[in-house]
Amino acid sequence: MNALILAILLAQQQLPSAPEGVRVREVAKLGLPDVSIQPIRVQVHPATGRFYVLYLNGDLWQVDPESGAKKKILTREGYFRKECPSYVQSLGFHIAADGTFYIVVNERHDQDKPKRAHVAVYRFKGTDGDGVPQNPAEWVAFDHPWGIGLFNHGANHIATGPDGKLYLSVGSRTDHGEKAGKGKPDPDLDPNGETPLTACMLRLDPKAEKPTPEVFCRGLRNSFGFDWDDKGRMVATENGPDADHPEELNWLREGKHFGFPYRFGNQAAPMYPDAVPAPEGLTFEKPIANLGPSAKGIPGSEYSFDPHCSPAGISFYRKGTLPAKYEGGFFAVRFGNFLGKKSVGFDLLHVRLVEKDGELAAEITTVLEKLQRPIDLCQYKGKIYVLEYTTYDKERLSRLIEVSGETK
Image: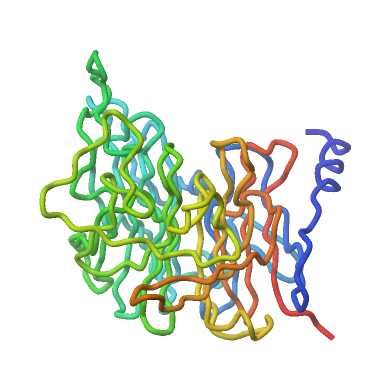
């Protein structure tokens, strides 16, 4: 890419319009439009204030939030296992309060029949003087068959809960529980649907040297983001199926089932002839109802978002530089749709939980629109930082933007 084309690309990226009392600033451009080197997660070190961005290929970068300066501090070759997988996706990243780093990696091993997915959580204890994580080790590992078609959502978000335990979201390996190999079996794919360690939320003991994953709850197609509010309620985004069912926002509780692959949105069954029948006696939890005014989409989609909008990262905001009306609520980003004729998502939402008819509901408002495939967010000093992914928007570059209160 020559200098003139790059200059044009940079000039094309406009900041979104901000509501009253909110200021938006671009922190840094992060990458070129290449599917293999797009940023996927952003975190801030709780002690040093250093910003870290994980890329899909496993590389880790540091970003200075003031100057926008960035540098690669870790490549995947610095911590992956010696055996070479056929394909790699790094989808999860967390820095614990004690400074321990965790990176979640999904490997595909094509030499196995059927193809094998290997999930690994790498743990780094301590950093050097420049904030580079040290002493990597494969801390948690498990396998399952690689996904059917495009649907290998993989293990992704990882975070520490109020109980001090780590929680790891593992997405589904199917769209709606379907079997592979219609008509003629495919030896590369396991023909069955989900496994005990897919489409669920896992809990891990950070004090264990080699913890055994414990299933916290099930029925989650792909909870790409989750966080806890000041009452300890765990709220997670949920990506819906190819069928035109609403995307979800769920209040996750231990031992509960949240529908997948049997129910979507407000108890709707999948729109497929090969839909999986629900086991007799299994009960499902409803998603959080969207009271609006934003992100409701088509009539009847109040549980919870527009179909195909791809809700992603979510973070609970206690107090900071932003106007007081945002305090005590969640901020969530929606990556935006690939399916459907209408453009939905591409925004930053504010979510305030309320009680309605004995159930949990949410008042949802739009904060920023026309973002460039926002995928994750974090907080620092009362400001929100939104990570834009932008793959498939070839004229755009990835970037990190800051959302704060206006300065006088």
